Length: 193
Image (tube, rainbow, N blue to C red; front, top):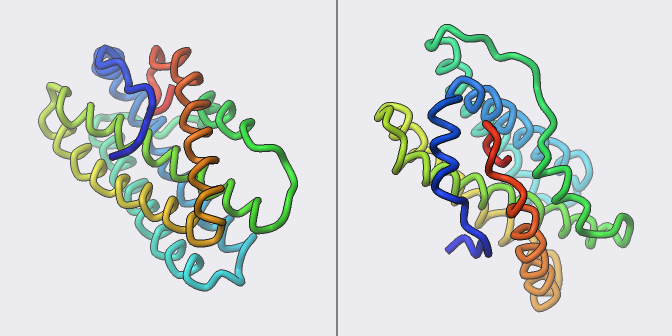
């Protein structure tokens, strides 16, 4: 369903299990960045009313997820800690050239968001199926369902605002590019890395 060209190596879960606190901190910041992306889309493209409405709802949901992850961090006797750079996102957003029409810029941003949500969904599925900590496994199962909805929403908007055939080609090209990025990732205690 997600269309990812290179699945995450299941051994990534072993890295996670040894570094749960680090993963939770990274995950909290991922939720915060997702909310920030939604706000940025509202600010940058206010004339797209249906997008604005969905992004308002998304900001609320992502900040709710941030709170849930932050609460887990506190329950484990940890503190949020500092944000780290996300090598996955840094590499991903190099794919599309800068500039172009406003519509092109919007479509590119929507495709990036869709792919980030798709990869998060895939990773959360792995965590929900493989983590020994059943409470965390259940938590990630619920978030996996949410991420799948976000992925499809962003892709739907990209196809709605762009020319469908062109958007689908860009999506496929971006998926191929992302697979190459993933070959070098999956060895760190981070959601995407």
